[in-house]
Image 1 (cartoon, one colour):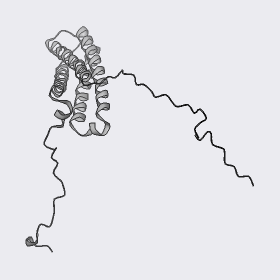
Image 2 (cartoon, one colour):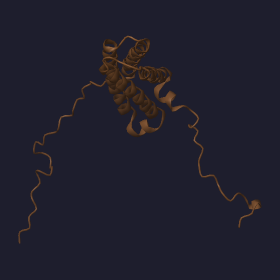
Image 3 (cartoon, one colour):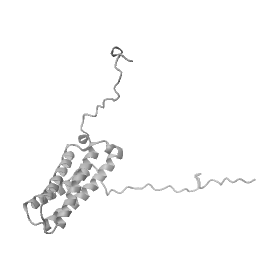
Image 4 (cartoon, rainbow, N blue to C red):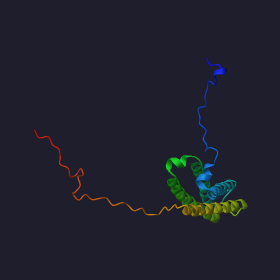
Length: 186
């Protein structure tokens, strides 16, 4: 048995991480983009909550589409923030995550804008519907505005990549197709 005079029985098993104190979101996104991501999250959440408080509707298709898009935008915003604020973006690669974020922002922004337009056209005109439509438009513009930040960071999704032409074997090199066959002749 070890006694207290000879030293501790158990030693520390973890090594302190000097980077653990900093905020990964700030390092990955920067202050303006992180703020924009939080605004996207909050606006889509408020739009979803206001839409959920609507008690009745005459033409409910617009309401249901808006509900789906506001909930999807809110949940996807959480997912994107989790990816950027943890080490998950390091495993996949930041360029890949930014490209996925670009297409996410395009898709959610356009569909949320469409859902807001449809909901505005089919709403009964109550104050709560107007408030949720307003937050829907604001959230749509926040998602579409994020495209500016991504473009400024160099994300170009439609950039064509030049493929290297394949070298054609002109017979001067000894590739496997030019080597003689080894056959056993006995």
